[in-house]
Amino acid sequence: MAQVAVVTDSTADIPAAERERLGIEMVPLKVHFGEETYLDNIDLTPEQFYQKLKAFSGLPTTSQPSPADFFEVYKRLADAGRPIVSIHLSSAMSGTIQSAQLAKSMLPEADITVVDGRSASFGTGMLVTAAAEMAAQGASAAEIEERVMQLRKNTRLYFLVDTLEYLQRGGRIGKASALIGSLLNIKPILTIDDEGMVSPVEKVRGAKKAVARVAERIAADFPGSPVDLTLAITPGFTETAQELEERLKTAVNIGRQRVVEIGPVIGTHAGPGTVGVFALPMQG
Image 1 (tube, rainbow, N blue to C red):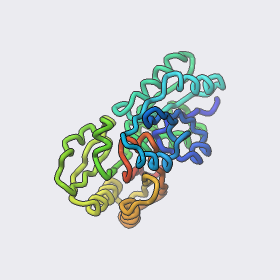
Image 2: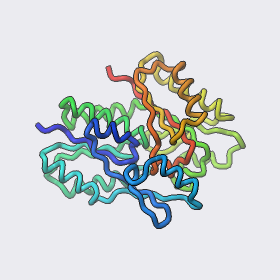
Image 3: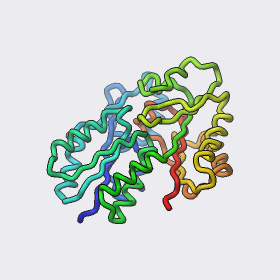
């Protein structure tokens, strides 16, 4: 049986070198600065995006891939006889997964499994890389799907934004909307809930306390167990990101750690200065 092909979209924020190493196929979303359109993480790197964002007077917009974009990738893989597992950005945040499902329906003979990651950025990326590692070891599409569902349930995600303005203006704020107009210096700790929506976990006064609480929460989620930890940052290690990394080192039993950059599409909706931590139990 041919090796399962793993497909995702650009919002998974998987570094290009890791995608290449694991043979992950990536379908990009688009970022629009006025009349200019860029393919997320292809035409526009995170660093270039945040530079453009500073200089741009308005707010960029984003758009999902078309079914035809997915069809092209799926057909090439299916023609090579490969089963496909396609894992994507939360359906509560984007129509990307609907495009993937439409493309699947256009290839009824192909073996395609489309999975809602119910997350964003490396929350999806962690699921995708785990799926690709399993595929490389010869796992079936059904085994990979089962494992991804388990990991989705066990992933913990907390993130801090410099301002809620980008989430609000981009319409992605979900259940955190009640936090708009909060008292000065209140720092919400946000997550993506089981429905795939941005949701507040708690409100803390000041960035330093928020960072401390995020580390405490991860430690409480995985008491003593080795954790697969990813720090997601906007380019350049901000003071908040540095402090969070230091606190996590002392609070959590880190089995594996990586740092990834938050890409243009997610950055459009979260804003510069966002820092997130994604954690999974290490595979036994």
